Image 1 (cartoon, rainbow, N blue to C red):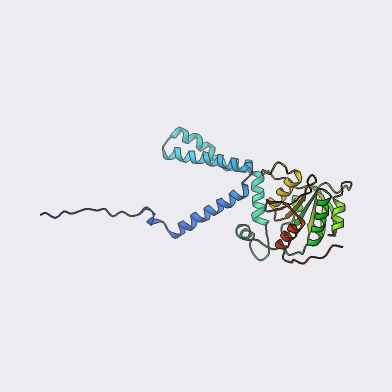
Image 2: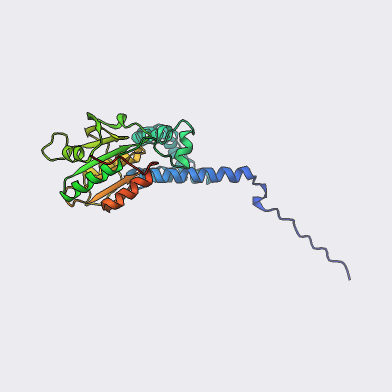
Length: 276
């Protein structure tokens, strides 16, 4: 009986040629795209980004299928894509570079690592008890308020209008500033450490979608917290509710006890100077 020789080809897996550096490269790109998505999600920029990505993928498909006319047309669009991106995303690119370059900046670690991986703790001590007492009084009287607590990023470049106050933080002073007949009540108050730095500050507005029952104070609070590491407290004039913004994320309808816990968690020193 003749020997039957079976020629079984040796199949080399496709992925056998992938190096460990290729895997790391893919993971880094996925992580960066994820961080980019977190930066622009909820805004109209996300729709524009997916529109541009769709055009680019269509161009790749036309190139692979050798559809020369479609490839030529889309090639002209992608050729000026870099300039178009700079024009369309001018404000968003500026905000992103500000976040990477200065957000959470400390002398011990590079800011880009702070942006990607971790939080940093503010150095200056904030008079938490005074802030909480003021928000409690403002909430009970349904007096609208917008309080921004500066951390590591200086807020001066983002303030269009401001009136310098430079006074020790106290609950009485904060309540009097937001009193309706006070000329300083319209706008935000900036807290820098234990002092009230400025009042009547105009903040950049967020373009992200917010619940329809939230007004311009909340949109301004979201805007400044998206582009800096500032913490923002909003007291609603209509409902007297207290809201808190951090990194553009909203914590809605909290009481003064919850606000106290949040501020104590955010700052290194949980002991604050009592308000006078």
